[in-house]
Image: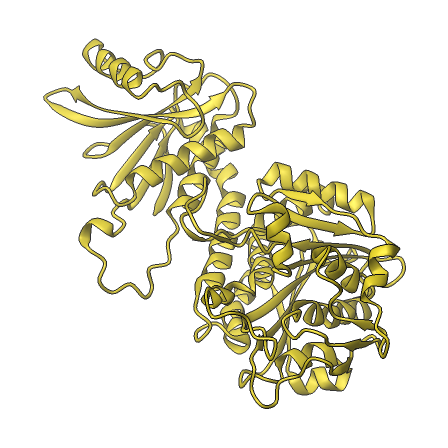
Length: 497
């Protein structure tokens, strides 16, 4: 879908949408003649439309000698976060019209009396673009009525000053939308298409945005002693990779922060094999790495004035004759040894070596890892929040605030020595799993053992957030792109300027 901003409505055939705030009469500022106003009022009454964010009332109204399809769309109550209201409005319009046969949507916000019209228009566009994203690559027999038809979104604001303001507000949001789309693409692709080497190849175009890319192969990782990460990969015909993406928008004047993503491109569970039912979902077990890659694209796309290193530990967890066994002991890059009790607790083995590498190589003082790590997190939080664990309360508070502001919500969980003791091993430094109880917490405690003194660290368990079984506010069923907005907002709030 193409997005553009204009001073006045275009000529020709299009659907017209008029945003209406909650508590505002639906015909107060619609700019229609009396007959059309009467129709709109009746349509609003029939739909019980009160301007709630994302609510829609629809009518066909006379316009000269013709008629036009018109939608009232709610932006929520005055005083609500404008981002939420206008994004929900754009999303609702796309959901209604994407496969409707309509080709052009015009949203006229010229009569809005409150707020920054340029920013409002940009957020309408963002909501529309995010909700309209689809992954139809492999669908060769879609009926015509199921194919997207909506090709253009025009947002009208009344004058040329609005156009300039909207374009300025849209530029960083367009970069964010591109980053989210990239994450959704990576997460949606099947495991025979996205595996460690092809994941790396998909990220190569980030160089065009100024991202530096470094790739460590298995030989390089073995030389560094990454026995934990390589142990996960040894049962697969697909060789592991460590992908490093660097963006420095500070000209070398600031120390870097690190985002580390779990990139298990398919997780059978290994020898501790998962049940067959639903195993196809494990193509998205690289959602943490996908979020890191999308965030790097968003930051580079908007030329963020920050220094960020994104690291993705990329492996496939398969059960062949070379796969590691329950009871094996591996040595991590840090030198700590791990008794592998369950080969399906593999993500923490990948993360520990990736985190060790970025600390030793780049001397980072802030590390945030993202991982679809535990099913226990879905039991605890469902699909409403990601889980947050941290050794630093200030960093945790910053992440919670960024989650609220971005819509990628987080919930803060505890860590303590009592939980940590649950992963002590009788024959190695630690086990890779503890008891069934507090499974997400003991997983976080495992990762914490690899965080160096003086490093601020947060672990985000996003197992319930990267894939949606039903449509949400800003996505259809499937990949959500969770994590990109969160990281982008954290950087904007805490690491730029």
